[in-house]
Image 1 (tube, protein in one colour):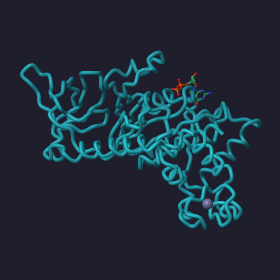
Image 2 (cartoon, protein in one colour):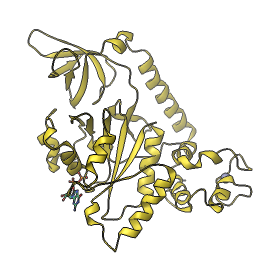
Image 3 (cartoon, rainbow, N blue to C red):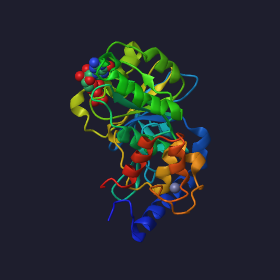
Image 4 (cartoon, rainbow, N blue to C red):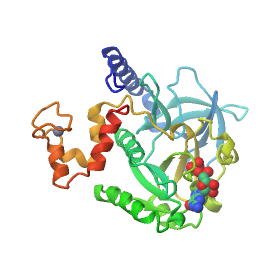
Length: 329
Ligand code: GDP
Ligand code: ZN
């Protein structure tokens, strides 16, 4: 049996979990929404570091414990906190989340690693040449979290006659769909100014396979302004990349969250309809197939196959869609 076909029991467990998450959010302390005076910048087991959000005084980092029965807290969460006599803080409530970014565990429960995110940088490199399917997996996951992906081709200093045409072709596929990939080099600095401009005022997360240059990009983008929040030196040390702690870095006019725990996604618990929705250029053809349960493989009257015939959808993207639905085939 393919992993995709969830049993009734699995389905109801997922639905139950989703209801519980919603309820958890809905039943929050209302005052938390208006009165948040801090933001979580890193998380260490029992303790969290928050930064103060008082507009009238400089930002400070406060080590906090949390009141019992709080909903889970992750980097990027807004909180209500207060300081005790010893200068330590205690978190009293969590503010409403605009979104939560993370992965599903083997039971289909979303494990948030960061919250209140505006952009997700999907980093890949000129060498080795990226697999389209891997990029598409990231895109499906990000689109399903209702976040905005930004594709980044790093290591463009390694472009040469042997790989340039192939990479240009890969990027053109995504340009056609409307993703506007960035070409950068964390070694030479090429394209970094344009990327920084695009991130102004936003909170961004970096994802991508190990070795594509995420840490190098973080360091280069940050440059002199990279401010130590919750132990930057630890995050810079490659030996600690197995940690799942995420950290928030303040840069000139934007924030970056580095979260080793969400560099790869598990799409097993994404429904086939959501996988379809994750291929954004398929949208105009949704619901137009002759058969309602069309698998878009060889059915007569399939609108998606017709779109491929007419050059409106790329065959390689449709192949990627099949592969996500049937990883074992
Ligand atoms: P991460 O695992 O994604 O964080 O990747 P790292 O930032 O640790 O980089 C992996 C390797 O790629 C390191 O040896 C970097 O020096 C190298 N690297 C990163 N960015 C570039 C780049 O733009 N060009 C070249 N030539 N090498 C790079
Ligand atoms: Zn179809």
